[in-house]
Length: 130
Image 1 (spheres, rainbow, N blue to C red):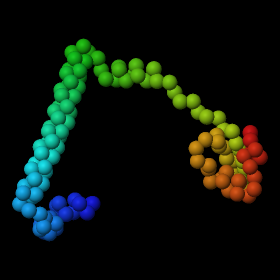
Image 2 (cartoon, helix red, strand yellow; image 1 turned 180 degrees about the horizontal axis):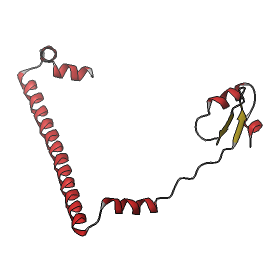
Image 3 (cartoon, rainbow, N blue to C red; image 1 turned 90 degrees about the vertical axis):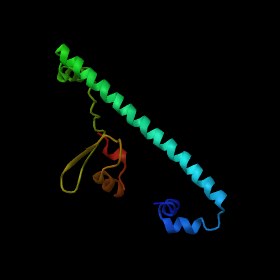
Image 4 (tube, rainbow, N blue to C red; image 1 turned 135 degrees about the horizontal axis):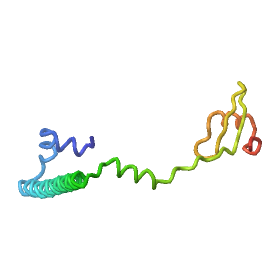
């Protein structure tokens, strides 16, 4: 929690900070906070209204689908057919560790621990190219 928020949310801390302010300055602060509060309330109401509108549209679509005899699984099967599967990246490097385990790495992303240990021994990536 920031120091500013601690002061604002604790009455005694706020009173201490406002001790040297005049009544006019305090009224200005209250006025500004009121405007900020109203703006924040309007934003929250707009978000809530948008969520309710979206939920109503979803329910309308669901009802239309039910009336047409279409199931969500029918749509999901169509999506599954159009999505291109990710290609598996072929390994570019291969090593055998001290225990006889074979490790492969595409060279992408973070260096695996087995390969880092191999490189720490003075070997290079060129030494383990497939």
